[in-house]
Length: 299
Image (cartoon, rainbow, N blue to C red; front, top):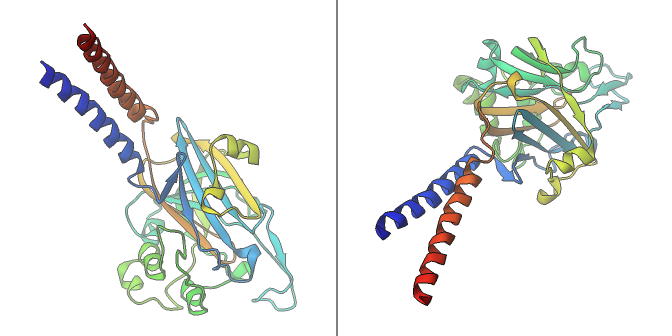
């Protein structure tokens, strides 16, 4: 009988720890229930305003929370000299946030209309803010004085370690994700477009912008990674608006001067307390047995 009780006690603890570990399995860097993609602090071509320091994603119940931090304010900035239109100024801000659940490279998923995307910054593009599905992506970098291709960005020396966060840490990792194998193995200025904006898609719902205090209350802490930028932007939306399973999420600035990415997993049926519940159950069972044993020794 003692052997069976010990077995169930051990099994409960083991299962609870496995479930808790499973929650971390797909995270870039998990801290306080947020998945973090911490970008290089020195790969923002053009200066600090173009440097993304990190992004973070959290699923809590039926909501998804997103946070971005760096030198770019939500409203964007103005570059006084447009590279493609000398003598004229150009607006540069955040582009759209993408989620790819397809298991394919980004360009292939885009061509197949299999991306989800979130537009959270409204600069008058004609698309309203919100969550989109069935998305194909396009490049708007040249409209905003930026790099016409990703190879150019790297050729100019911006391929720092963690070039797009810890999940896409090297330039080759980035090529492998964004392009088919034939391109990734031989990237050029002609075959590596920076697809950073929603081209087509169907809006399926809205987002809610979050204040710094709301993000802090939700457990966000870029400071844990020394990655707090001058501006932190946050928003939330219903989990039902987006896919489930393993994903890669990514974002660029409108000019393509920096980008960040994160690998994670969304559960179709959130189970935030399953692992903790089993862990407590296992501990409770163990404490009961310890008390019973102590009583028997004192009897």
